[in-house]
Amino acid sequence: MEEKKTLPPIEPPATEQAVEQAIEAILFAAGYPMRYDKLAEVLGLSVKDVKSIVKKMESHFREEETRHGIQLLTYPTTCQLTTKEEYAPYIREALGIRRGGNLSASSMEVLAVVAYNQPVTRSFIDLVRGVDSSYAVGSLLDKELIRADGRLDAPGRPMLYVTTDKFLRVFGINSLEELPETEALSVAAAQSSEEESKTEEEKALAESENTPLNDYTEAVDSADTDVIYENAADAPIAETSTDT
Image 1 (spheres, rainbow, N blue to C red):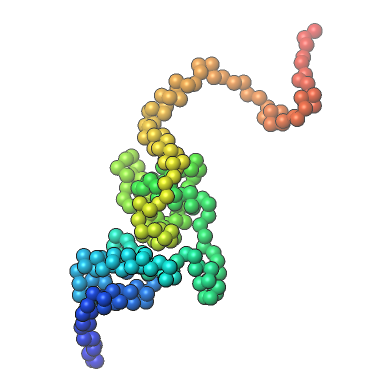
Image 2: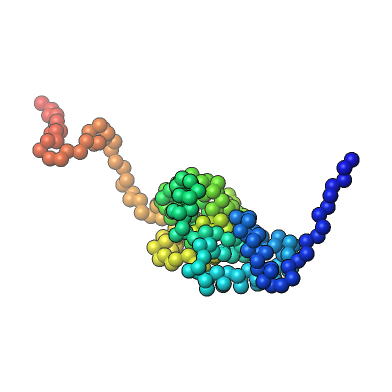
């Protein structure tokens, strides 16, 4: 049986500059987020040291922003080299990439609700939007822009949803703190939160208090009532019967 050949151990970079160059080369070749612990293992450093070096590299990219068509994005557990958004049309044209895969308006609404109020349940999302959001939530889960993050400690134990690191990468931000402020969504979310917090007993009580005692309405023929006449003169005159 042929024995597997073992590769000799890799010598760690000798200087900090060499470490930066190695990290840049790894991120460029990967094209996807790399974990700090993996970089630390390869480079023979601690995770803390790798994070510190990557942060320094990020500041260099920011200082020389006008000189680069790429940017270094950092996240709690990963980092990635990506192209800048303004050069996307040139990249698509050069690589023959068809434009597509954009999120629908409903998916964007759901994503906004989750991003600004996470963790949230699907019923909370439905309350904010006023419509069923099951399809949009499923689509965002498939695209890995949101993920399940445990269950709410409430009857039925509904699933809680949060955004992912991929969400940050797609929108070109490093953390949720960089999201633009939006008062309208906060107000809608607050109102929905109040509505969701009501118990079924409170809702039933409120409905009973607002319902009049004489709430009886005589049934009518829907064929007549469904017709709307633009001119009152066109409406048929109801026949009356007289007893002789």
